[in-house]
Length: 380
Image (cartoon, rainbow, N blue to C red; front, side, top):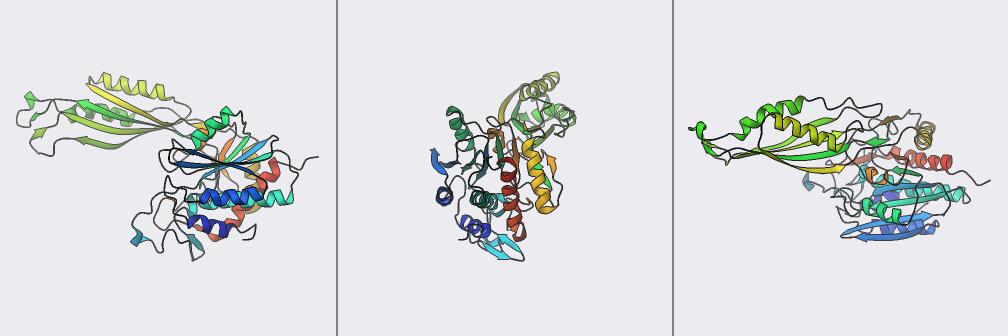
């Protein structure tokens, strides 16, 4: 394999059926190449999750590429145009599970680092890679654990590029410099079960919940800020009843989620929900799950370097964005002051016939390499 062949490395990674939390040898393949380029590679296993930490050099600044080798399940195989774990090229695209999310980015990371080191072996600073097989799953034994380990070792990251597929219409049009937080709740409203013909002997929790739910769904939670849109509240599930048409249910269970900006806090949102529920006199319990805190990297050296690299390679002016779901960037931001996400077009991620455009592979790799050149110059 030629050092610059991003396509071949991407194909090799796709061919490994690394459905969460499996890695299926992807990280071993990467480690072999990185070691040949002078990286010291370490496998960190937590539970059933395999993680790779690789670093070349000890000087500062340390620029880290982060990503995940695990992929989501394929869905119905018969709906794919080709086997999702046999990388297939057709119509100018490379098809396979993980093509866009995010094995192409990982291949581009590695080849970009190889080219950069070959051209500038005496570069300033250090290069790291943090690769997990637990991003698409519960995310408890992956990047978060590696970051905790690095923190205990006093490893200080200066910059981190997460290879999430961020581009929307064209490669380079969107650069994520943060993500909203995720706060989920399960609300149980208590009533009294009874016969629908005798409502005076029952308390219908659906009826009791309805006015409060209207207020929750129409509440203005915050205005967002320069980088974040306003916080949103969405209901995902509502369960009540026994299945019988003549029984008033005894409880109603509502699942909901906040995607919140740095203009709100989990504690503040919880307090406001309680206030609304109490105002309506409900007998209730709420179970809260904080999926992730919001993180934000204001405009700085990393975003400036990446937007310059994108413009130089594609002619596209990248826009900073904080949209989308959560990512492992939320864990890395705890130990790294500048974290951005950048990768391929995201239109097919998690879908049947996931793919990347073949003509974006080399430009993606070149953008990563140009960013290295801008942030880790030759030693003088």
